[in-house]
Length: 158
Image (cartoon, rainbow, N blue to C red; front, side):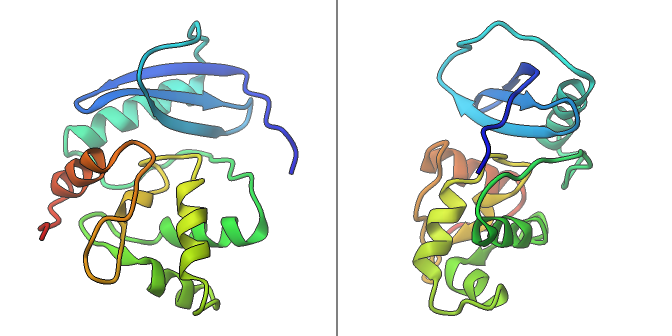
């Protein structure tokens, strides 16, 4: 897997923390929650579009994203992330059913690892994947953010 060279970094102040946005010349490459701004911003049109769409999402005016994205990972990871893009806003899926959907029914744990390596938080909605018993298994931004995002999307939590 090649190293991605970002040409721009931007920040979006969400209701649940700072989000760092990274882009290549052609696509959105990273979207992560960060504790603080650690780099000097260098905006690009893609970063500006991502920040605008994140603002719309947090305002409740957008449920999916329309941005060119770069998903750099193994074939398995890209299959998992591709499936996540099809989980509708306001709904959840389980690691087990994602594994079955991509033709790897015994790979629920591997799905969990791939979900955890998702480079495009919120845009590729990894927060919509939960355990089979309806439990939260992890989220790079913290479980409290996963709960907040799901509630924001109208998911009733146990």
